[in-house]
Image 1 (cartoon, one colour):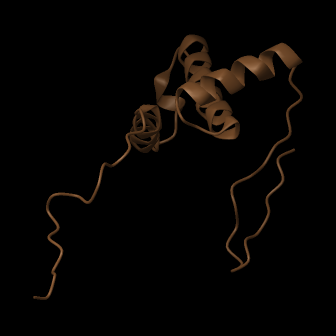
Image 2: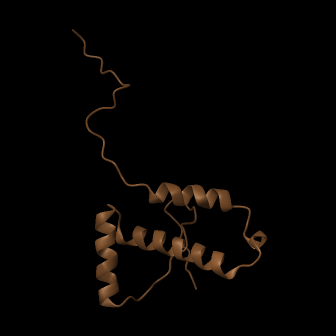
Image 3: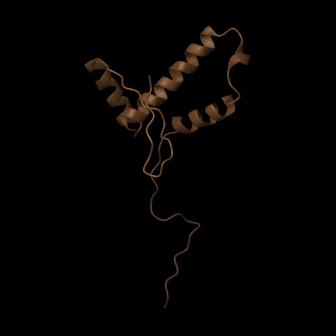
Length: 100
C-alpha cells in the first residue's frame, strides 16, 4: 500500500512506495538516470509510467476505460521524456541595466 505524507505547509505529497531491486537492475537504473541527467527515483518513475502505459495498451481491448486525464498524462510524459538542457549565461531577452 502506498503511503501518503504531508508537507510542512499541510498539503499532501505524492504517494510513496518502496521497491526492492536486484543489485544488477539497480546499477542499470543508475546508469540510465545518469545518461538522462535524472535522479534514480525520477528515472524509475518515468520507466514505471511507460511500462504501465504499455501494459494497459496491450491488455485493454476497450480504450474507453482509461480516465479522462489521458491528455494530461501524455503531456506530462512528453515533458519528462525531454532531455534536460543547460542554460548558458543570461537569456537574451533580458537586458541588464547598468547605471553609468
